[in-house]
Length: 159
Ligand SMILES: [Zn+2]
Ligand SMILES: [Zn+2]
Image (cartoon, rainbow, N blue to C red):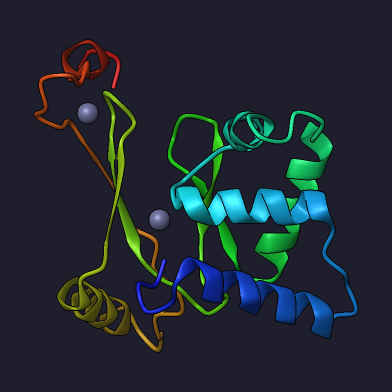
């Protein structure tokens, strides 16, 4: 997510965008959205549900799911698949927010990066194939991290 905007600014932006499409925010929806941006990481529906239930135990799975869907529709979240069959939602600021990911196969830690040099090279590769122009780039680099706590040795055997 862009570091130019604060969490509150992103929330305000989201509310403004909802209002523009004739939608009202609800109290439950606000709790979910605020927590999602506060956590600021790639999170599954189940994980976010667990988080919001700490303060709002009556919120259900369907509400969390629908709220994330709404965020995706308005470009405040991007669904990501990192090769383990789970969909995770990545906070975004309502604009085209392109960044790439490094995923540890051992502990499933996800890091974000964005490198204009790599993008420029990819644009070159695409252009060299013919009359193409790069529309979107999504890089996922799968790694074994070297932290002591990471069970990467066990995971490395079954990739
Ligand atoms: Zn991300
Ligand atoms: Zn790791």
